[in-house]
Image (cartoon, rainbow, N blue to C red; front, side, top):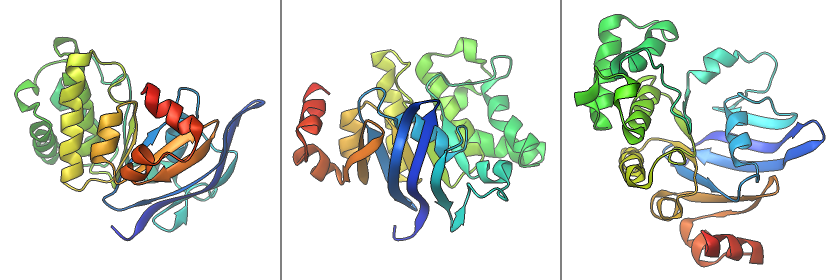
Length: 243
């Protein structure tokens, strides 16, 4: 884990007069798990959406494998093939089976054949413990199961980095554990992950680096031990005390 796959430099994003990101800087190394924590409205999800250009930053740089993806010459669709995204609300196609949800982008975006797409999809559905539900539609699945299919869908594209935007926030408490367990397994397998989360125990146990955001800036970043045992500000101590 010594090579930066992503470098974020002085990233800024405003919506009208509302400055949401005020100059964000951090690096992501291959195989790292980075969790982003902070109160609602601190800019966490906006930062994540800027990383895969679902939102266009106003200023700054996002360097991916040595190239600034904010350069106007960047092929955005080509870049997005390398970043998987797991959303709060699953975003599955309700008229498709779990298997089809995991094959359609492989075929349409990556141009893979049907057999190869199915093989990859089945592999990743098995990895997240959902192989027995491959023929089920989302309406037949629990929230936790839907989110695990969504994770398998992201994995099926074999991205270099997987972004998770509060992947457990829409789940009932009893379903949170199964999704966090799946993500823990991915971390153990060496996947590069950036996770916006309110699950402090997951951040403490699984992260290589924790980023604490407050009012559109990174107020503190460091190892889980540094963040949770040695918070540098009173605001950070308050947040962790509530969490």
